[in-house]
Amino acid sequence: MAKRSCEGCRKRDAIIAALHRRLADLEAQVRDLEARLGLNASNSSLPPSANPPAAPPPVVKAPTGRAPGGQPGHPGPVLLRLPPERLTRVVPFVPAACAACHAPLPAEPSPADPEPTWHQVAELPPRPVEVVEYQGHARTCPGCGAVTRAALPAGLRAHRFGPRLAAALSYLSGCHHVSRRGVEEVVETVFGLPVALGTIHALEQETSAALAAAHAEAVAAVRRAPVKHVDETGWKEAGRRRWLWLAATATVAAFVVQVGRGLAGLTALLGEAIRGVVCSDRWVVYNGVAAEWRQLCWAHLKRDFQAMVDRGGAGAAVGLGLLALTGLLFEWWYRVRDGTLRRRTLQGRVRRLREDFRAELRAGAACACARTAGTCRELLAVEEALWTFVRLEGVEPTNNHAERLLRPAVLWRKNSFGCHSESGCRFVERLLTVVQTLRLRGRGVLDYLHEAVAAHRAGLPAPKLLAAG
Image 1 (tube, rainbow, N blue to C red):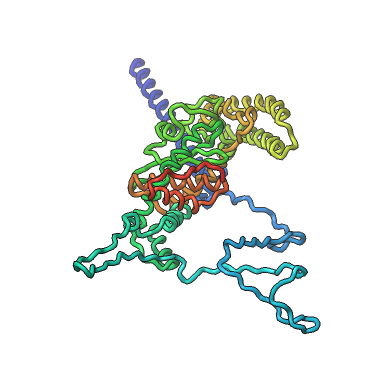
Image 2: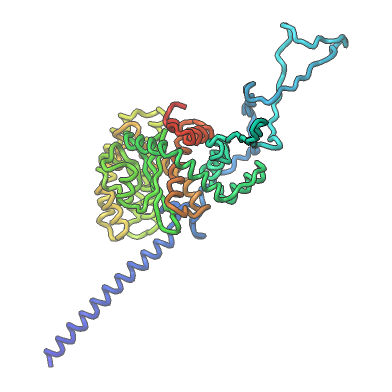
């Protein structure tokens, strides 16, 4: 009897232990779901536009009480006078009689006369596109009666749109993300030209081919760069998931569309042997870069620390400590940027702050909150990558540069839902590369696109993208 009773106790204890484990698992799931419900732009990678209704309101500057617009003492707008070669015509107004004695005045100016005043007016002509019709005339020989017709040059017959207009249509879709139907309407309404959707697609592909060399030039430049900012975002090709990768320096931006978000995508962008410092977020694929050649984005880290606080529990105190240290670090960094603090002084201060930071991470790695502990363990493993901007000149502590350059691509994806073909993806990566690089370098986008298309049609090398502007 006692033996059966002991066996029953063991079964009961086993059931209770299993129920305790199950309860712990369910409690962990509830905490995870509650944490997900609490995600917003301040503690995750969610954009502000995706904030849930319960998210804290965005930071709003306190009203100053001043009227909107320019304030007293503001210099006001500076009128830009276009040079004479940009003028279509000049209309002079010449006084005929003296305003004082009413005597007639000469029509031609004298050396004593002051410079004329000026006012320029820009207007769109009724027909903003020049249409040239090339005609191949025929003549009948009076001697033998044979008819001879002048052949139109093959180069003329190959295209119905000139290189500048072809570049302008790609500029609308590639720079301002106008859909093909939108481009069709703009061309017909503003330019007064009928155009088919297939023609717009063909012109995009021609522009893409014209920019292939420029794209390769930009990719090679970011691979050689000593410091580069890297980021990626989702893309679509005929409904299938793709990833748009970006690597950027202060003067070059290179985009590539790849099948995956893994190492193959990073390799396609930066090559097999990655050189220089890579500024990025904490996505796992960047762990292939040695920590001393990485710079983790502190803007992402700040959101991670805020998430620790918002989850509450055992990790909240760790999050508060890390946020306080982050605020102190950036207070010093802003002073380095504006020249009121020397970098050597910053390095000395960071040596002490770094010890406090490690202590907070160790405390977080040992705390009872699983997600906070996991984040802290991951940061301890790459802790060297937090401080590269302190050690090396030219490295920024955030990846904001890449995120700003990537934003137009995100808007393009939201508007177009990606591409329908691989060739469409090539158009996207090449247009984005050329446009963002030209903007970074202060060069005209449309002029370059026109030169590239014209060179492509003539079978000439493409103009250099990284030439001095």
